[in-house]
Figure (tube, rainbow, N blue to C red):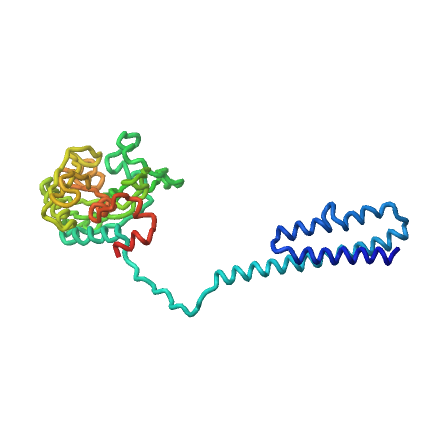
Length: 352
């Protein structure tokens, strides 16, 4: 009886090994496993039949069945490992690296097109005697709005919705990501006055402030983060005529074309009075005949001059603000602002 039982178990183990060897995929192997040690497998059924045996028979037969089950599980694990090794071998061959191939040549890098524009703006205005100022991107509410004649709850603030940050100064003033670089007008003026305090003569304030700014805006021609450049010229005899001459000269130099018309269209800004939008018109090329807005400008408001620490009866002048991204789009014929921020090498390579 025992010999017959052992022979049957050896036959089952051999059948399991043969079935496992024929399985060429993990799913096939699991199906073969179910035939022998699954819930209704042959070994499982033999174990269920032990209930009717005597205690002595249970011991001997149980040990034999257990040994058979362990042999089947060992064969199953060996086949699982073999299938895994075969799959890894196929993968390694598919992903093999041919070290005999020549190395990939590193392409030279280049400046981002907007960076090129900012450097170009700085060079042009530097040639006109303007300083370049830089300041914080996290700015106080007073510098961003109130100092620029835009007090709390003023409706004009809605034109420049911005991002506020969860910090406040010791005086309780809120801070935000600056919506423009105009705060640098007041900061630079304060530093300028301090620098020449006690001097018999204080030079005119002539400065541009390029940098990153933030507003709640996003579409093909606007971004929540964008590059802007503010300009300021204050002195005892600086007029709107000077603004027209300076900005016309800048545009014609920037676009390398004298065949360019400008118009100053009346507008409203809290920090200038009178105020004007600046439009340009190309006389040739794909944009010929269209008026395109490129900047806002105006005579600096007397209250802003006071906030700078200067006497508006003595110091007058103009300010302007333009988007470097917009100028880059016009210069290179780009029709979607978002391309500048996506990091697509195929696009950026054109400006290298």
